[in-house]
Length: 409
Image (cartoon, rainbow, N blue to C red):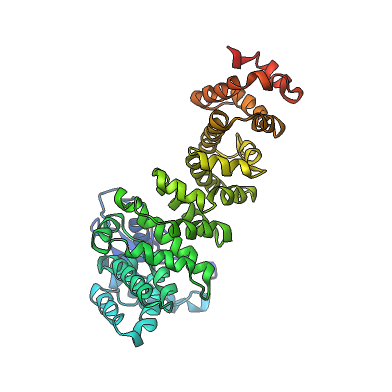
């Protein structure tokens, strides 16, 4: 566009771009619909960006047809200067239309066409996604997946999962789903994780993300009933390294299920500890490491988990390496993991390995670092517990000496 002055009242206060679909809020300020809906629906904002007056997520947004026509006319007049014409906005998606599409899912011959249409609508904007949630689409999609599981049907699953990831399941609704659907959804999504189909990486990633959304709000009775096959499939997501999103979702699922001893046992039996270490050896991004170490800590709280941890040649080394290099959350989990290993599985071989891979040196460095006092106390406790062996090791003698044998004080 040539250097041409745009009338100020054509510009959205949020995006600072020419408005395509101007709407006026109850505070009297006009915004581009996409910008104000994004402001309201995807964040915790509950105030008008300009006036700072209260503006709830369900506030009325009145189309400013007069301003839109003025903008369109101005764009047409200035087309020779490179100004693009702004088309008339499509009518807003309404609840009745979504309900009609949901009804079409009961007809097998219309399912793929309907799901494709719903997926496109969900991808368009926040307004559509909010409308879909209000119309009960999350529940309809979960029931559709459960029906596919019952019939052994894979067609339509990819679209249904994609829709759920677009619109997300409201936390308030995820609680209600369990009282109505019981364990069918968990079994259905577990089945999806084991299915062979086109675009399986995307499908599994979306399935893991949906499970994450559901289990974040699940009751303890649901988490207590999870089956071995469920954990085998979730660990399989880690093993296959499907997508970054899928890996983090799977880790969050495991973390949510960790507080129950029976779940930890099933995770270990599924080879979770080994896969977690293998994943960490690939140097993932920070959030993945934080989730990874959170799960590892819980699994190292049981004897079977510690045994599997120590059976991997790189376990102690990778945990030690992450100390003081990722985040305070990782430091916390790493120190607690080493504490569990030293306290309950501290054989002479393990104690020597900690010295060889510089885990003990890292503990000494943590004592001098700017970190939480409780972590330093835990590090001193670990060092004190085996100081008689470690002080004789030439590779760390200088480290302990420079600290004036804090472990003995």
